[in-house]
Image (cartoon, rainbow, N blue to C red; front, side, top):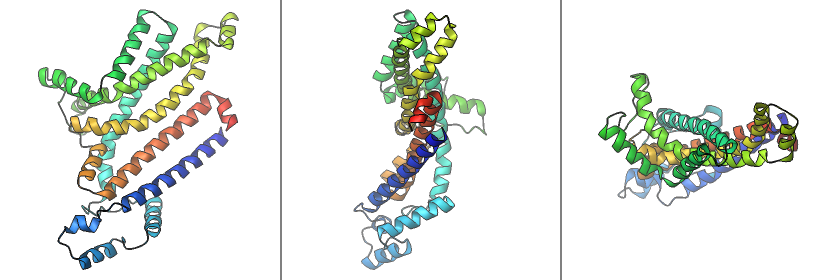
Length: 315
């Protein structure tokens, strides 16, 4: 297990390094210069040269990348935006907790419900419970999240006033209203992944229950609960893998959900940075998303190694 953890951690760090290098080069290769964006089209060549010199943009890209990486790794400092001059660390500190909370709650709720529904669907195959779980899975995959968000706002926020139509009330101001304000965004964000993980759990568990060693375990008189425990430990390996990927993908869907519900989160900050052509902020936000995505997949690999020791031994 330790070998698996070390290998996966090293690979994750290498992936982050490659992504950061590619992202840095791409943002520096955009035709629009930060100096031209900030100073305007009427800026003289001397003003642009002075701007580039003041911000270190006149140095080779590799030198800029090494300086940026050193500052990031040693001091966790993303610097200031070339376009707006704002501290990017502070911007991320203001927006990341909101997005992380919504994504985490939606993911945990979707994962727990999907495992439960998928397990019941596999155990009671071709029963009303199975048909209900499969119907929920089909609807979750088929219904677009943005359309579901608009429908939920109409029925539960506009017509009935059960939930706020948008925005997130800070927890420090009113805990009850804070929880109410994130219910609809979490529901919209988690519906698709609830469907995907439910189908994956059902199909994986059905496959494991049909294997020879499962039939032998039942024939030997093991308690059904213990048989199910053994089956789930093997069936959840692909579910955990898909779950790790899904957690990272949720941040992409959060871009749409935060716009619809008027939530001032990190995904919305990314869209604002794109509209303002604030490429340094785009780079910082994408790096944070990459860090979360890689971290989620690393955790999924470690959980799979615990669920199936053969994977750890093979690594």
